[in-house]
Image (cartoon, rainbow, N blue to C red; front, side, top):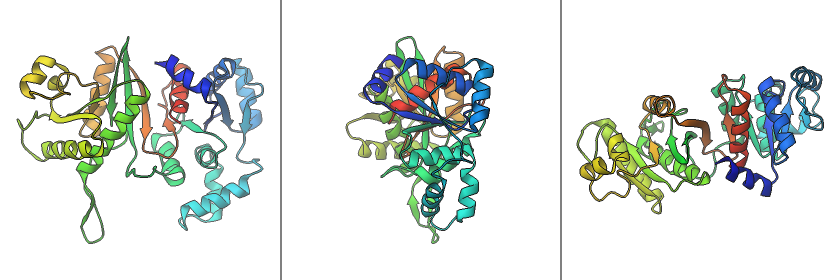
Length: 332
């Protein structure tokens, strides 16, 4: 998987900004990327602190760009741009205070074209990585929400799973008069289509299973209705992608069970892209695959944003930072 992504980066020189430039794990990854030469790291932080941390860890970052929000020469322009983006929700003083922090500063570097991608979360929470992205980079045209995908790898086998990290549940969005402006089913359908797109980046030909405790009407209730309706919408949104549901996991992965429970489906029994109906089952599902199934989990990969911005686990190691750097930058 990574060989293909590296080839993409070799053909398309890109910069990735790290919001926590003095973190030892970030520095180890940045030094490795500098040596490899196919991706250019940009480190956010106090220059002396970053250099001292690199020296302490024995990481060669000589020549890499280190940007300190407190001394950045383009800060006035950055503040003005952020004020405009926030449309009166934040004053210039508020924006300057926010941009003094690595998460907002790094996100604005991406927004202003100073970097192509961003990786954060070594010390920031997921919310502190996603919030600036939503406020500044914002969702891409046609996207209504940000979601996530995990790429699961076991030998030559690759699967995609979404959303396991961002959307807790799916509820109808209403206007002030109580009219539905975006249905829960439309949101889940969007997650399915975006996850299929991410799967394709990694060389997966997506066969998308919309997961449920019901297969083709065997169960009843609002949760089943959500998945069934989302399936219909997703098929309309991406008619060229194999999407089917609602179906149970055994029907999704076992050809015998799949064709028994869902005869004629091109997905049932052969799924490689799994869409969970809410975060609880998604989080449990990918961790079962990881811990009991022996799959390596790469992600969460954020979907729906105007630029590739991803969130690390605060418990990550340098190898995970390195791998997520390649994944993030290759999504540009």
